[in-house]
Image: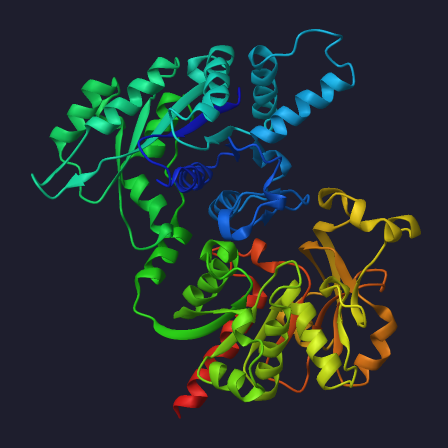
Length: 548
């Protein structure tokens, strides 16, 4: 069977949930036994999100192969439970960089390089690359931005050409749009959607299905009007009504018949979907749940999407345990330049503390203060990435007596570098400031971790060895292993060669664990990550003990 291609575009306004629509459709097709891959094309000029400020763009989602991608790729993985690759997130910057690099190396043999055909062909190559090998039944490609944006035009032309090359029987276009509601005269307006479709048609693309974001249910007259003026079948006008939880979306779209229509139009076998696990998930999300307060102490708290996967992982654990985690957002800098007593008072009423990943010296001291307070007050603590590093700095300073302990990332002149930039050559160390940030060494992607038998981590994972995704430059300095081990600190997660510390636990505490990797990227709504599950369980125990 030829691979089928589904292209998801958006109109009227940005932020309508094209990524969630693509992810939900992927879930519905997988529930029918199909092998699905999802990718996103982003029109911005950044080569990838690696150097983008999390407070502007949200989190960087890291794939198994180490690609630094848009947070929508996290939606794709969580909904489909398929590990994606670097081909899941392609930007205009990457497309142009590839073409320019090829031109500079003589790849075009002196020919004139233009948007058409060279940029368009590069985009199409990435579309086809996902399905190489013939194992993929359906590729869903989300086109970022809004129809009519100048920067998105090459992508629209590329998908038009793909539909011509593979045949319309193997290609389908879904247009996600908004039906705004006006209080006066009290009706949904279809004109913006009509204009958006007209713009799409002017580029040679006829949408097959309209997915309409709406506050109110669509009546038959609205569906018929949209079908008539947008040239789609009436049953292909799909209602996407606002819902409480994003995990309700697959069931909403299944009820609307989206996947059935897609399979029909693409001549795919469409058995009854197996959505039992998803229905059970949604039932749990709708159930009444007690609240649990988790303090999140981070560098980028002004934009909550900067920690999207952390929040989702906590929610996955909460759903499984019948608890609603409520986040107490604390900018780590708020905990700096105040007394230990003030920090203790700030955290005294929370049920758990999580200090997530980040880069740079700003806010580090606040993270250290949060770790110290949680450790001394017996509050369940989970340090992830930079949060793990700062928790170990706390123990080094306040228990091991290494008063000047820190990470060399703090760029202090007089520092006991508990964490340091490892694996640098002498030449790289000498000229580090001259090396572009994007070219500096970094541990990225999946790496195995060996767990110490008898440790809390071993019990939580229930395995001798696991794999987690890394995204960091600093490593624990083995020169300080003996001093920290003397405090009772347990290096319970190590690299297979025993060289690098990947995780630790503080045994004199209900739950004080740090992990240098990013387990949040592997949590799934129907299968919470065991570390987040154990963390929330301990938070529940603390909450109930305070209520006695």
